[in-house]
Amino acid sequence: AGMSSITSTLAGSAVSRLVNRIGLTGLLEGTAICLVLSLLCADFAYSIAERNGFDPAEEIKEKKRKAQERASMKKGDKAVDLAVEKKKGTVAKSLDLFRRVPTLGALFWE
Image (cartoon, rainbow, N blue to C red):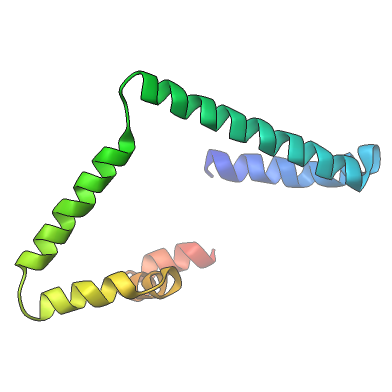
């Protein structure tokens, strides 16, 4: 099992004890405090990255531009298929993936 599975299981099993100890309102307040702290830490991390010259937005834009150029260079059905694939939603893409790779579907439902 992955680390996120283990921590999710531990956190889920602790909810009832926390509600009994601090109440539902206290649990929601604690969640709000953790969320605010997480947002502040994320903002601080991005400011450090910008100060040190690391801006992943430029890399992402460059990758998207290159992918669009490759897609526009392709002709015929492949370009049309690529355009249709981009318009599909996340659920449709997931279903297509599970149809192509049944093992992933089985792992997802496990």
